[in-house]
Image 1 (tube, rainbow over the protein chains, first blue to last red):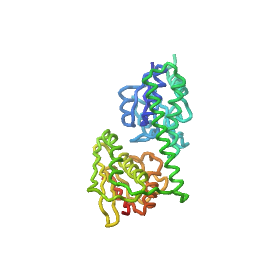
Image 2: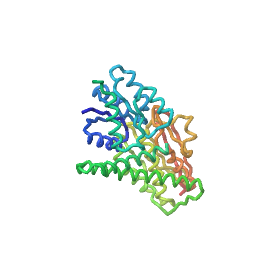
Image 3: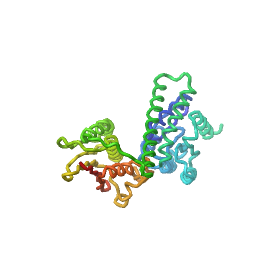
Image 4: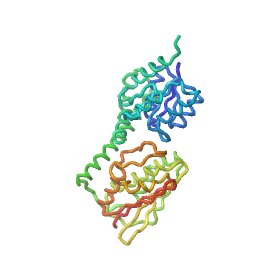
Length: 127
Length: 218
């Protein structure tokens, strides 16, 4: 089953998202800040990255930029998952190559699982 | 940011409870974890709403203190104890230099406790691992005491210091990232001290640390 990397400094929300995704059979790994997120992306090669916008050390969009600039990591689909949904942040994220920008307060755990499935299906190589 | 500070705990409460409702076969341990999240985030929301109400009362000139003769040292010691576990987790030394016994001071002990809480909370937020936070009391004049909370944290750039005690003003956490918090803590702190007839002041240098001092009349 696919592996999902969650990058968020909010431990409570990480616990909730992990519970939902693991319950759906996904493998998960987590990072509390941008640097650890980038390290884990490189070492664990997840199939999908769900990335918060407000991290202790950098913006989610900056993490995204770094991922997309790395030839080994640029093809991992990344969706922002944040309570910050200002237009400019969303536009910048999508311009940098994010596949989606999910607002945490608008989705429930089951919706997040469905979104993850949708993104992974779209990213799977055509048979 | 204040919207974010309210949305984040509400999102956690909403999602925890939905997960528990939707998953009938959840192991007890997971359920306990989610219930703990609901409890802790509810407490966080209560604190945020209380701060908003306090700020509104100050703005409307309707804030009242319940002053009684109180032991200032004891109020501070109790708050330091509350923050000890957090400080230990971050390997931050929390030092108290509270001196000899003080005569009782006529003050609102709950509100002064809130001031100490705000100052310690900020220092912990902005002091990296291995740093130091010191709380001290001294006689400023024959008729006033001064309490200082100093840290070896990231400090506040000079150009931002004059706005620090303004309502809804937030200092960026680090690396110029989005500010965190409601921006009300120091505004309420200043308002409480002023209501006591005291003064509040700040000394800070970027990358060296911050000291915030307030006085209380004796």
